[in-house]
Length: 409
Image 1 (spheres, rainbow, N blue to C red):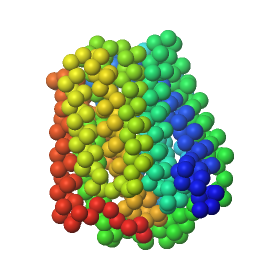
Image 2: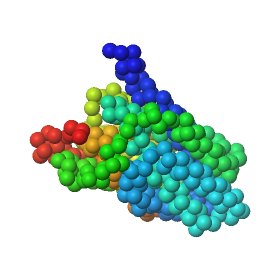
Image 3: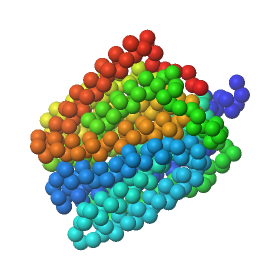
Image 4: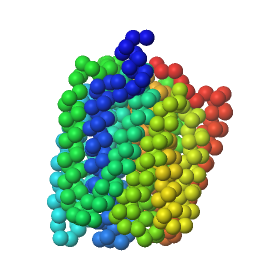
């Protein structure tokens, strides 16, 4: 084995200079995003006292993802992704400045806030899909599974660092400095992308010359793709509205404040990081892996719903994060493994539609459940949905003769 091969085996995707740069930039950016997310959530909840209003904030952020995902997938398969990421990161900086102006007013204007969040969601939706397709270009086919799983680490690590710092910053300085920190953090992505050399990337030339001839519905694994996307929608709508649910449960039901809310998200993220490293050690991830993963997620949701106090909820937060991390990483890795490289952008656009485009609907449902019942209700509903999804996945795998994977083409 050559020295380069040994290095790649030892360090996985981090043997790629491009991946190291991008990972670092996204870690900073994801950490900064939590300053904005936490500040806006607390400001809206303090101004309105309504979980439904908080759900509208979430809907404004993620509805554009649902609408733009098909276009974003085609762009990721036809336009150099470095160019897309530079545009989306620059646009996000501009939107953050606009949000600073809105929250800097003496009285909150919810319509203006929602309008700026729609713009933020538009840029972030295109960026998320492009970033997932970018993993293949940075690490190549052999390290794609590990590279995809490890991208969830910078998301989770940012969540473990950001909320705690954001809670302290909000308590000490208020919302405007939190948004300013987020605006500055986007510069890390811009710098990282500019430092990545195009010559170091693995080409997906077939996706830019005739890639549209690859139709997902013509692939032999199309039934598995449909089932994967359906499971994603069901779990996302019922169990992934953590910004609404955790904020309401910690602050309204359990009597916590900004510091406790930040701690809940941070501890949640610790479990997600652990889950990602566990999955990275597995030889392969496939559709069938979703069955046990959904069971673990369902049990974690139920345990958090039954937490009798804030201290117990915080103690169980890493378990919830473990379930979230296992589900998201397994979903993304198995989705990319089922399709040819030329179609990754389009496949991940559909996954993103389910992951982020469905969140607004789930947020509205969760907000209504919280306002009519309690902050525990959405956790219990999500738990039941995850267990039902696990049963459905197992039935589909059994009916397909145990086939949960597909060769790359």
